[in-house]
Amino acid sequence: MKFSFIHSIRWSIFIFMVTFITACMLTTASTIALEGLSWGAGMACILLLICVGIAFDILGTAAASAREARFHAMASKRVRGARHAARIARNAERVSYVCSGVIGDIIAVVCGTASALVIFKLMAGMGAGDEAPRTAVIVLFTALVSGLTAGGKAMGKSLAAHHSTAIMLIIGKFLYILEHRLGITWFYPKRKKSKQGKRGNKRAARTNQSA
View 1 (tube, rainbow, N blue to C red):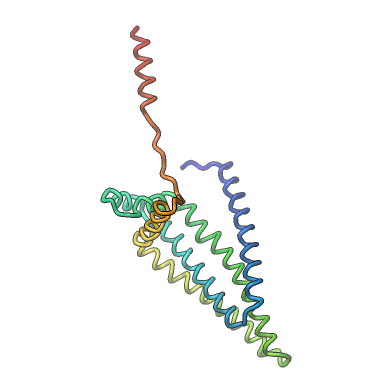
View 2: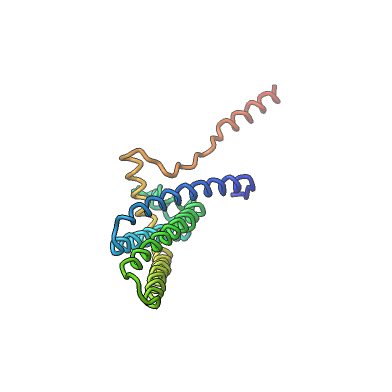
């Protein structure tokens, strides 16, 4: 695919709008939800967000590592989801960027906001006192969230790199179910250009020349 500056600008604007709107919605929703929860429930929500971020990072890495030819070979044997997995592999650059970059950044921002709210609840529960325990709680909590995120993504990237075909086939089967049962299509198949018109024009030109 040739590089197009205009296409790149359009894609960047689209990503900006999607990221901005999604981040606003998720941050607002998480803030409202966590205000009525205890710090323990808030920590559980943060762990759930971390797991979601790791899952999308695995998907993005698997899409970048998978080979489209393998799925075409599976599709020739009529393996369900193989054609959909091939479409993902064909659009690997965008899928990888959206899953690992855009969604990962959004979840990181939401996790930061949620962590701040949980720490605030912890500080309120501790009451007035020495600043040393408060500082220790902030440092340990922040380090825990960062360590779980980084460690989980490192493990997920290794898993995705070694099992990219299997992971993509699972996602392909999921997309297959969405398309055939719910009528939802995420990646449209690439349309082949018809060569019949060109052949017809060449034949007509030859006929006119001979006449």
